Length: 111
Ligand SMILES: [Zn+2]
Image (cartoon, rainbow, N blue to C red; front, side, top):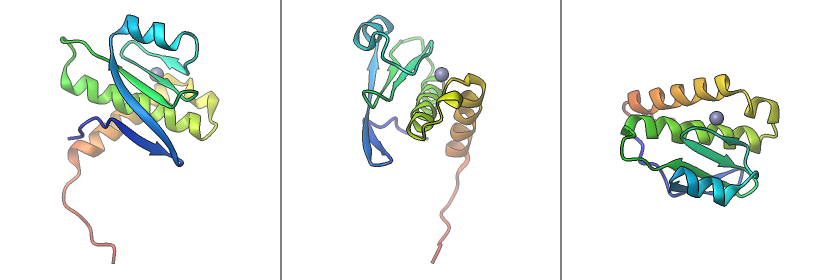
């Protein structure tokens, strides 16, 4: 299981992760975001992800939201702006990353 990180790097650029309520996020980011989803947002301009912080949000859903926003950030970083707006692609990759992370077992020695 992942713990949602506070920061990480994509292609050498540091991104930060925040938990905010929806109103605060919309105020903070205004129109400067790649995608404002119901449960999160990715801003490649500011190198920030936000996850909506709601008590009723299941842990699993928050985790998938993190993966979803991370995929947006990765596609933006790669300059794949058309794909960044393909929510079906982004969500498909998010669910698979979540499944990968939940089902990974053991370590393979690559030496
Ligand atoms: Zn999205």
